[in-house]
Image 1 (spheres, protein in one colour):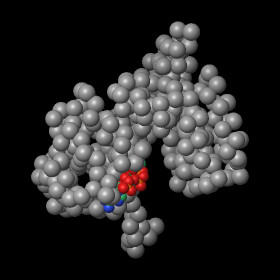
Image 2 (cartoon, helix red, strand yellow):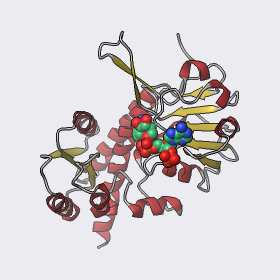
Image 3 (tube, protein in one colour):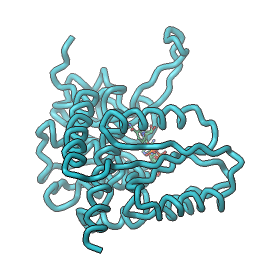
Image 4 (tube, rainbow, N blue to C red):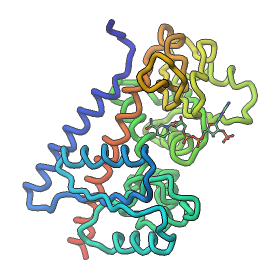
Length: 299
Ligand code: NDP
């Protein structure tokens, strides 16, 4: 069955990856070195290893160079900081991505803050968070909210004057999402909700654009959604399913079956927001390469 109000993140991400590949090819043909992403992976976390493989494959397909530097769980914080520092000073490295989570004995904040903000393609460094807040186009925006905005734009959703409600206030999704939507040129009126929000159902029901990023399976029910709203589901939650080959399946933060009939547009899980994340990482890496080339030529 074709669901006409479905936002197809998989297809949109594939399109963006093709666009990045075309732009990268043109960039290299013009005599520039291929963009290069350094990925740092600590430990044997299976999900992290799988994400990193996906990123490396996507880079290769887009003509972006990448290498995954693997370190054992036993690496010390100082050793890891030395790795980051070396990459910061390597002129052939455009983007640095330290895959999270890091082992408990390493302070993630210290490591993220050590990355050169001009190479911080994940957009987690406070300099980039600050640039985003003040609306500076040089900000690297975290890939998930950047991908959501791209979906909203490509599906022709009017943001100017729209009431947007963001459920969740994490530094990697909720807050940057709200900061993006409120910028001049995007012009939404934004409310951010969290676990202490009162009258959550009523607040959500006012949204023209509702973005759910809380990590609670099927939390957003039909009564929380205004008919005709655009609903973006960021959640990735495992629920038991004895009939699924792995004994579980992945669902979002939105009760998709209940919400889909009355929504104007809705993202599924999977194949919604998830695939956009890697596509936006590639875009950020190409941008980093352009910026470094400009900075080198100017110096
Ligand atoms: P966090 O756990 O960091 O933040 C969750 C937020 O949701 C918090 O602000 C929390 O409030 C709020 N929250 C939790 N429960 C409730 C509730 N009952 N009512 C209202 N607010 C609530 O999560 P992330 O932002 O990192 O991730 C959110 C979801 O998105 C997860 O499922 C994650 O797996 C997924 N995700 C998906 C990505 C993708 O590529 N598709 C990328 C990143 C994340 P408070 O601050 O008060 O505790």
